[in-house]
Length: 262
Image (cartoon, rainbow, N blue to C red):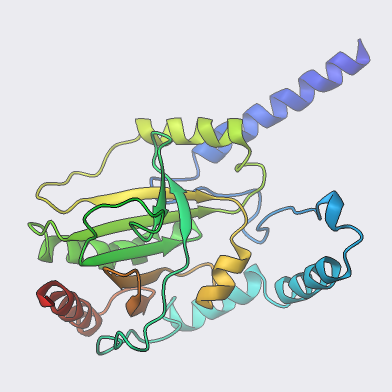
């Protein structure tokens, strides 16, 4: 009887947590247990005897411990999320690097691999793709300062995609039943009011994104990251934080160059 009571109490706590979490996010993000906690991870059993795996894990722990929520918050207070200025000109194709493949989910549960076409499925590739990345809910306003102006400028273009990607690193929220519940709740939320050929698409990426962030050199999780990709999935322009008029002009100009390229 005591055991059943304990299980029931744990179930109630988990249910309350899901419901409380649901009130802490909008269409752009989900708040994990603590903003200073990314995920709980364990080495796979087959890796326990691997020296390379252990050394790799130690290096990761050292890296993660050297940078946390308070460091991100301190930087945010200093520069407001503008960790660097955006590119003033388009990055040449010869030196541009490919955006790492990322799996994300729509609110209806359908999955997609970004950049568009990276899953190997044939189809018409967009000439330009704007990827807006958020790791915490507070950076949604930063993303909006880019995506809304971009959407208005290219509203009638069918050769452009816009994806607003929200990252959920919490291991608990990434569990399949919890993830499905959260996605259903997001589906019920108010959709973006949009018209025209170009649509702002909101997707969610669950799980461990440490190495993805390392590849893109993303350190501060409290700011927004903006990437303009060409039809080969290469990064041709990048911005950070809240958009300025000059940076928006640069983004729109670089996008026009990609659209006009034959």
